[in-house]
Image: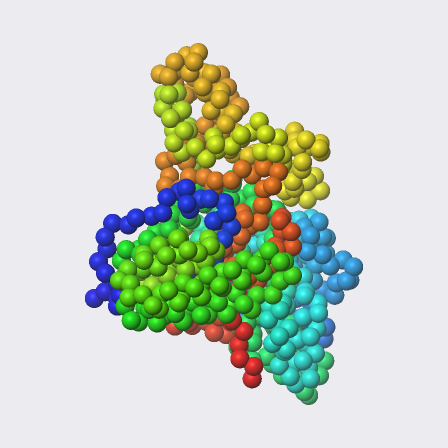
Length: 567
C-alpha cells in the first residue's frame, strides 16, 4: 500500500542545468532531508550507537582531556578531546591561529594510556602535529566566551540559561577547521569508506566530530557550573540543550572544493533534484499533506525570524524569504490545487529565489520515505576521461552545447578576469588577489574554469581551421598540452545531467559566499551570519538530538529549529 498522498511513479522531470547550476540559486540553497548532518544522525539512531565517556579528566575550570567510546554495530571508535585554558589574546577564528580552546580527533579502536600520550603531543598542534592512519578526523574549536560564561553562571546559580542570549548566539563553541581525507597522517577517504563503512558517506566523520564537539561543550558547561557551586548548580533542560548548536567559521578554504570536484557536485545536485522531482510527480496535496505543509512553513518562517545577524544583506534575504513564504502560504490556502507543481510554478512566477528553494525543501520534508533510498547515491567515483578519438568538430559542438554559459563571458574585459585564486605559503589556504594590481598570478589555482574553456575553444577553432573538423582530439591536446586538463574535464562533464557550476570564479565581483552557502547547505547548515563576501559564521546541529536521545526510534524532525518555550 502506498503512503497517503503518494501516487504511482511516472517518469521524472528534473529541472534543467541552466536553472539548477546558476550560482545565484546555489547561493540560496537550504538544508534538506538528505543533508549530511541529518543522514548521519539517522544512521547513528538506526544503529543505536552507544556513545559513552571512557576517560574524563577535567579540572574545575573544565580543562584537561576527555575520551568517548563509540560502539557501532560494526566497530569501536574513540573520540578524543583536549581542552585548555587559552589566553584571550591567542583566540582567533582565522586559519592562521596556532592555539585553540579545544582540539579533537576521531580514531579507530580504544585509546590506552600510551596512545593518549601520543595524541596529546600532536592533536593540540593541529597542522604542525602528525597523527597516524587510525585517526580520520582532526579538528579544533574556540569558545564563544561570553555565551559560555553566561550559561555556566546561570547554571551555577540554579537558573536555566537566558533564552534570548541563546537565541542570539546559538552555540557555546565554534569550530574553525575540520580536517579529514588523509591530511597530517590521517587515513584517506579510500581507507575510510572501505574499512569503516559507518562513516562511508560524504563528510560523515567530519559531521560526527562537530556533533561530538557540541556534546562536549554542554558537558563542559555543566561540569564547570557544578565545580563552581556544587550546592546550587543545575543542569540545563534537554530542550535548551537541543537548541544549542555548534558554531562554525567557514572561509575561502571551502569554496575551491565545489569547483575542483565537479562530478561529485553534479551528483549531489542530481540526487537533490531527483528528490524534488519525485515529490512533484509521485505525490498529491491531500488534506494531511496540506496541513503538514502549513505547519512546516510556519516553523520555517519562525526559524528565519529568530536568526540574529548584524549583516544587513542577510537580514534582508531572511526577511524577504519570510514575506514571500507568507504570500505563498496565503495563496496555497486559498487554492484547491491537485498537484504540488502548481505551488512551485506559483513560486517561480511570483517569489524570489530564496523562497522558491525554501518551498522545494519543505516539500521534500513532507515525504521522507519517498526519498530515503537516495541517501546511498551521494558518493561517486571521480574519474575524468580523455576521449582522444573524438573528432575535433564534435568536441567543438560539445563545448558550444555544454559550456555555452562560459563562452558567453567576455574575457577581453579586465573585470571578467580581475581576480586570481592562490594558496598562501604560510597556511596553504586559498586567498584572492587582484590580477592587474597585485603580484602572484603565476601561482594561480585552476579555478577559472570558464576562462580555460574559452581559451581551449579558441585554440580548438584554430586547430580545426588548420587540420579540419575530422582531426582527432588526441592530436589537438598533443600539440596544445596546456588544454589537456580542461578538455578531459569538459568531455567528462558533458555526459552528466548538471555539469559545472555556472560561475566565473575570477570575475572581479565574484561572491565566494555563494559557493560557501551551497556546500554548507549540503552539510545541513541553515543559519548564516556572513562576515564578508568571503567568510561566514554559521550554526550546525541546532535542534538536533542529543547523545542521550539516540535510539532506533529517534525522530528526524529537527529541520528549521526554533527556540524552546521558556519554562
